[in-house]
Length: 308
Ligand code: M7G
Image (cartoon, rainbow, N blue to C red; front, side):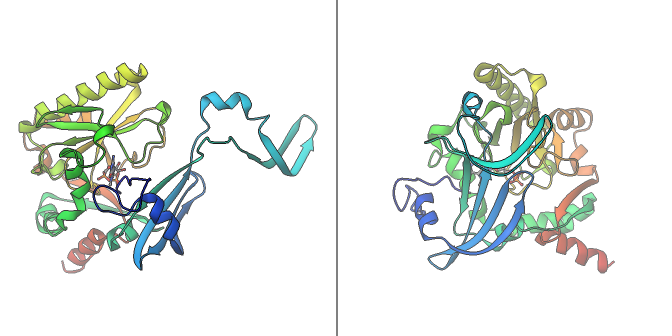
């Protein structure tokens, strides 16, 4: 997703601004609605092209908690029993945002399938299946899919949000998913090179880069939020959505951070250790992963299996 300039219709990149997308959005259908994480994805059209919006309820800011009771209005369906009571109501803080909003416009079929409600399935990828199915799939993905990464690396987008840049090595910046609170810290480190597609590409040649990302992430989290290395979870996704190497940097206190589960997240420490033991660990390993049933890669694996 692109961070849109909210002030006018089209941002610096010539893409529609978030404000414009919201104003012109024609709702079509709900793609998925997670009532536990309070996150909904809706599909619609803007200028007759597909657009995806997500709305996620934000956590209360710690500083506002002392005022929660005083700000509660319009109690509905109140129940009281002995020392217990519960109800629904509205708590509003004038000027304090309560929803994190993201947009993808124009959205591709791949985006629509990624954010649609669907079952997840386990696929076991051997090195041969990687060579025959996954790698050709990655190679046919349109280059624009990682344009947002190039924009960050060349300073065209999010330049003022970059927390750290190690020239010709990597940048660290807030992930699009981060709501800004330290408890749910979510940064992303992006390698400043295009030849590392994923975990599968890593060898001892990349150890310096991986360790430098780990060291910088830990130092920055310590400087900014007093977090120690023990309070952070650094991981790499397999399969990722974007095949340009990056590392997810999250606070351990964000216990159910999106994509933190077994079947997708590989701890950076483990990755480093595996490569230190065997240079070609990730070229020789069988890597199981979970994937949505609507993901095109899943169909390719199914076809391969039915043809066996
Ligand atoms: P991934 O493992 O390829 O995909 O991670 P997934 O976690 O979305 O399945 C890519 C990471 O980059 C995710 O954590 C995204 O939230 C984040 N991200 C994606 N986009 C399009 C942007 C963006 O434009 N800016 C920033 N800052 N982060 C992004």
